[in-house]
Length: 192
Image 1 (tube, rainbow, N blue to C red):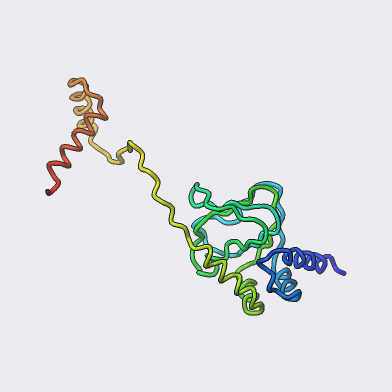
Image 2: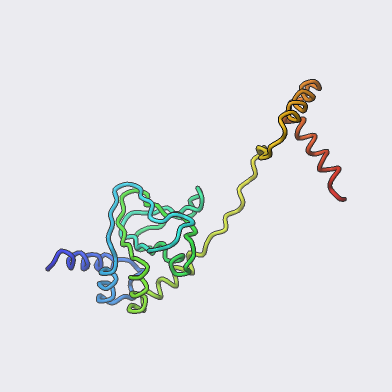
């Protein structure tokens, strides 16, 4: 038996362990294993980057992955999970970053291979559709606004110097004087 064939059989056997693939025949699991490329990592490895085009999906064989939106971890997924299929299926940019959290093995399936496999393996279409339904993009609550913000505006240096001198002369902190001036300007220019 060739080394590749042995690996395909091993990957198919491993997929059989997960409930996700219970409806697959042995032949379908072997077909899926043949279109996938196995990758192993001993350290955290980003698989998917948020806001990038989708070109592949993954099946986690071992280890765990963290799913992040921005810097917020929104989920941890384990073996048997299909990852990255939502954006691939919808043809949109990735809505999250997915990174292995340590040692892990994954099967990577390229877009074209997945398209062909979806036509040939009805059970694969079922799990992809179910996974897409579960992995609806998450709307996180807005982050709290910081109590202070820098003002991104260019102001004539002479005006800034006069303002600083006036605040200093009044014994008021420049930031406090600026807040007061802004509040008064808003009050004068807001229709009530």
